[in-house]
Picture 1: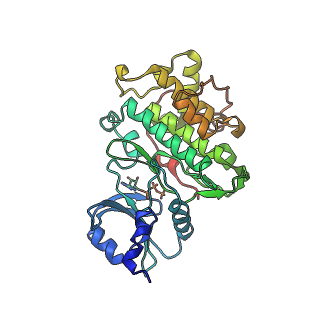
Picture 2: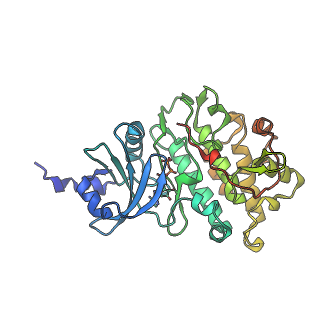
Picture 3: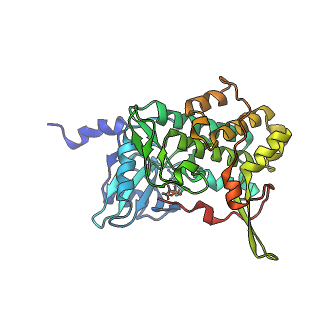
Length: 346
Ligand SMILES: Nc1ncnc2c1ncn2[C@@H]1O[C@H](COP(=O)(O)OP(=O)(O)OP(=O)(O)O)[C@@H](O)[C@H]1O
């Protein structure tokens, strides 16, 4: 019969292993170093006996998050892609807390670079941004088209894109993902994801598909280019009204005027930016956020466009219904970035 340690081959095969709470306490020094806080719990830094550095996500509570926890383990256990954050293991405590263990990625999440001050944003050089766009597209193409099932991530946003020490991107957080059969093109689901990245088909009871991730990806692309959130609000003290600014509309207008460089994050140095690449990213983004899912490209097509294997035609004019809904303005405002638009609906 095999001894316990002879099962180490499972670990070597990249399958998630179960950690005891004692092992996790040892690794994290009793959860001494928090590195982040998400909707479902806090994340702590730790070191395993073999010296590898880990991130331990603690999901508090007995019942909440159980479904997400199971989904995350089941889905990610079977995935192997260089741009997906690998799940090293999991843990369960008697008190009902649950743990997910990932490799630690030195540069944290994309949102902590993109939406902070200029000092942080300048580290996201144009070359890094383009590579991040390409890494995420490749991870999504793998999930959508290269696995036994189609896997919908359903929560693509900068907070769920982690960056390693060379600013290569890894998609993480499969808590609300969904598997669908290869022959099915759509699936019914309740609203999930994060406001600001949700495609219109998600706002009404309807079928979602891989094209829903494509929409969220397109929204992330625009934020990468602009170095700002797509939705921003500013309170007008005089009229006591809130003004919304919607970056995608501004981008669309600049594209029509032929002044695309005006949409690029002003903190980037002009000489480092390839105008041709800006055109590619912006056009791809505007294709991805088409309101009609059928017009959006597949993630495989996106990869081909970013890699220059497929031409990127001028995207069609999209009505951008959200503009009328919020009565938004189009200036490239640098106003306050509200928490309200990043509320998660699960
Ligand atoms: N593997 C990791 N390496 C380094 N930092 C990490 C890692 N995982 C998470 N973090 C940090 O912890 C923060 C919170 O992560 P978490 O996945 O819980 O957040 P979230 O995606 O915003 O939340 P939610 O679970 O609600 O989607 C991240 O924004 C990031 O800064």
